Amino acid sequence: MDDEWEPPLPAGYNDTNRAFIQAFMARGTLTFPEAQKILAEIKAVANGQHVDVRSITMADFENYVRTAREAVSTLDYDILSMKHQSGGERVWAFINAHSDPSTQIATTLTPEEVACFKRLLDAMFDEYNTPRMEVMAIDEAQALKVSRPPRRGSTAAGHADGGGDGDDAGEGSSAAPQDRGLKHSEVLALLSNLVASGWLEKSHGGFYGLSPKSLMELMSWLMATYNDPDSDEEWQRIKFCEACKEILTYGQRCSERDCTVRLHDICTDAFWRLHKDKKCPKCHTEWDGKHFVGERAVTSRSAFQKGRRGRRGGRQSERVAEDDEAED
Image (cartoon, rainbow, N blue to C red; front, side):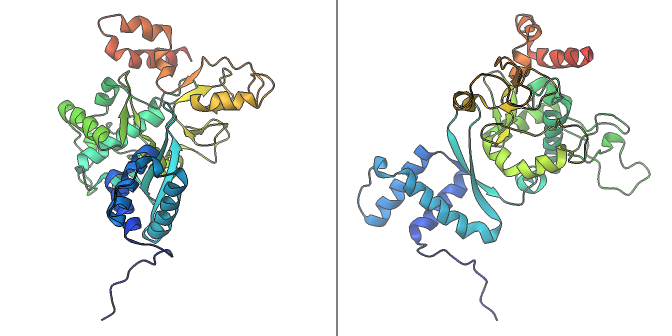
């Protein structure tokens, strides 16, 4: 009988590399300070003596990441990095190189929860992501609205569910079992689970959005699902920063609605230092820094601010979005 196949390992691969990969996989993401502590502990065990965390350099970390990428590439895993869009700290993520929401979370969630997660993505990147308001985040009230699948013929049938028929699906059909949705209490528990497991982040303003790890892991799937390469329109639902070229769900936009230039907040200072004047590089409109992508597309509006002072301010983001679309 042939020996069990083992993936080829990079030259110089040793127990410290193996321990680093195991620690990385267990956490899912790492920042450089976190990696310093892990590598210091690994080296201390390997060398039998204390290793100062400060002695671990970025070059050391990058060498371990490079070796890890080579070691796991044949297993369809990868390690990518991006800056956190609001905090600016670079985050490295251990990801599945061939990823979609179902395969990634099916082992930890029920089929109904997986379907609900897809509907949450539809809400973020479809319903609450329009040329006028690019929110790409949802609050609790909006999440509860997708607790159940849309009914047959509903215009809200989403991309991620493949336009599923919801509660009416399966009548006179031998299709897949019905997705009957979740109770509101179950949706709230799912949101907490998705935040705890690193799929979502919850902002101080109460909005849920994809984490850096999720954006890196699902980027290809997001583009294939929500962007239309054959569209005559230049605007697409998945956007990228004009400066760093990384995916953008939180930042600034050109004040000209039909212009597609977007910038991360963390990229603006360096970007404008390279330009003679603060004008959009595409349409040359003055860049005022007051038009936003992300939750601030809602929270910066006077209607939202007034609503927060009211008794029902918690649902104001939904009403602002609906009122804004009605203006169109």
